[in-house]
Length: 184
Image (cartoon, rainbow, N blue to C red; front, side, top):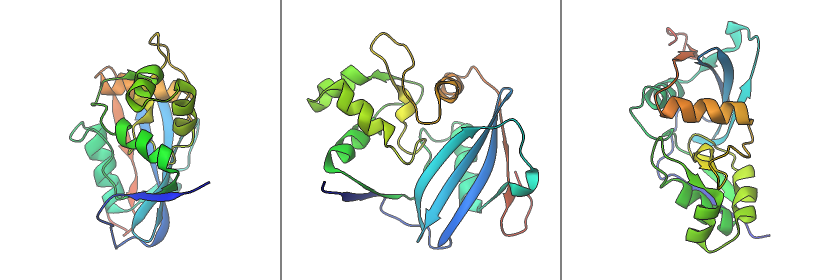
């Protein structure tokens, strides 16, 4: 399998190799947002529902706190962090098209497949392997009848993200600056 590097243009040189942890409260749902950095680029993002989390583990770099806050205050339509991922050329085409889905809008796997002249199953497989959700907003891709299907972080988180984008949910972000400054 041939892999290609898909990245944003500008890296953030202040972060070499590190992990940021932020807590996102979507109504009553606690979600741990983990951002992995390597050589100034985000290489992985994970969202995981959690019932309890020690605040002492919630540390993040200023750029992560700022961009997550901008996304969840609806100042940006996607999480705008520099990224670099190694993916197949097909995945790159799928992800580039996914970046065109407007904030608070959805598209079906079938509609995306029709645009790219492939099968909905192939789209689903590419979405399943998306290492940077919220940067590449795969949560905006749904089943053909409007049903929620497939999301690496779980359907409950997918539903919460879509409800947030439609304005039907309250948000709180918790994190402490890694530099020792005040948190959000």
